[in-house]
Length: 166
Ligand SMILES: *[C@@H]1O[C@H](CO)[C@@H](O)[C@H](O)[C@H]1NC(C)=O
Image (tube, rainbow, N blue to C red):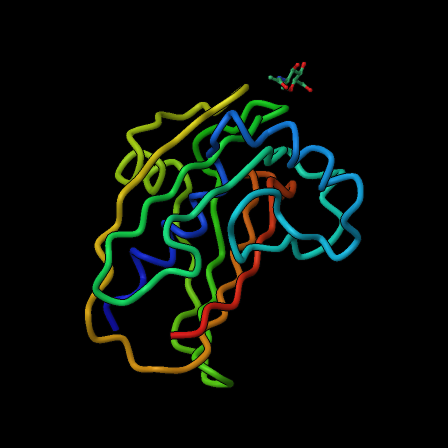
């Protein structure tokens, strides 16, 4: 299954933005009760995001939802409110319908370096933009991704989930 890098990037998109929208998205964050991540995206926080180390200001996907065979552009903006050092990790689960396709742990610093050229320690405001070429042939169905991110001491950085229908 070739989807791993793409879905990882979907998750990493949690760090990005379009400045023009940040006014609206901060309002949306206050009003929204079902944990939606601000911006034009299918992401939700897994639970109350108040205690997360990463504050996500905005994530925009173009196109949203992503389309097979198209380039997906991700813009994300967030703030690491505490220093995130080497040893941070993410647990990624991808399901296709009820089938668990992927269940793996990855090193956050390595992923950030290779995907968006950001070095650890991660601290303060980060804006990323990333283009991802989606494969033309993605088996149709509902894909659900969970990304749970922790420091090396297992303090929660963020937790995101999204369901995308191809
Ligand atoms: C990022 O978080 C730090 C720590 O909470 C805060 O002092 C800073 O103002 C924040 N930066 C932005 C741009 O929101």
